Image (cartoon, rainbow, N blue to C red; front, side, top):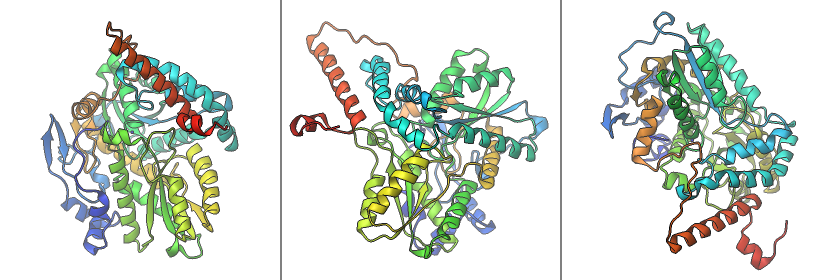
Length: 492
């Protein structure tokens, strides 16, 4: 999950989730009339901080508006472009149980996952090794419960194959689709090596995260920026980035298709609570680093619920955040707390929607399907359902293919897509825009810094910081406060 442009002043729920028929019509993502309503609210480009950005309409972006609003070039044809490549970015996951500890090390060695002050960033590998070693046994149990490894690589490669076929059907039979994982094979570095060997001339970078966060897309973008900068050949590669795409009609429509289908499995669909469970991030990412993830997530949910309403589905909904780790405050409300509160309020049926995930993996198959379902039953919720991840859903894949085709005219440019918080365009300009306006996204490679000084006060501060980090690492592993343990006794 790096961003350019200022966050919108109003939340999407107030703009797009209201009860009036006019607002529902503006947010409706199906039908010609809705598309015309969206076009009438198309933004006017403005220049801020040296990059083009946009004011943002309340409705989703139709499939003809994935690129910059002022598009003047026609969509490219196979004869007008060189070899087209698409790089799908994802997190990655351990293929086997033996891969769990090294995968966790790669995860926690990322300075976007554990954000350390620059003066102590040289400790990142040490902390990553400690945390991964301590967390590996419990994580192995989780992966063992879903078959002995993550299905994420297999599903992402299936999505790549499906996207390649969809692009061929749209007149791009020579387009090559690559998979680049951040923390496990096939690594982003491996994908970029293959892209270079294949002589790709135009590259569209497409994260498989609908909403942008500095901890997911931002981390991969920073790594890609470094890979392009350090290779004299790749530094000349023409490319463009689609930072987030939660507002696209095809994505919203595909999500609602699945939700509508699952609702019909309940005895009384109208009485079911729609429960969106999104991956959480620490509050500091949003409040201090300017991460647009929370706002994009709220807008995404508002667009989906507007489409639900347009289809005559008026279920109540809740948005909560899962997967928090350690003692720091994460985005609220938390998924587990919300489930307990809904049960206490008498909610009898829950349809859970894994809103930030487009592929099945451990957080859907184990955390939601096992842990949260058990919690729901313990909390008095009698009926449970879960919307499947999009995976290779035909409507979803077709919309991704449209997004790629629409992005091709803007290779090498920086411009704002219809209503996104993060500008599309070339990596360097995108990240420069983010760094200019917010706390800089750290380099993916920890920098060795001694931090040595003759001042005893500063030295003592460094030592204190090391002690604090050690405490935080232990608390992250156990989920328990050390001070609480000292006074109440430690139990494992």
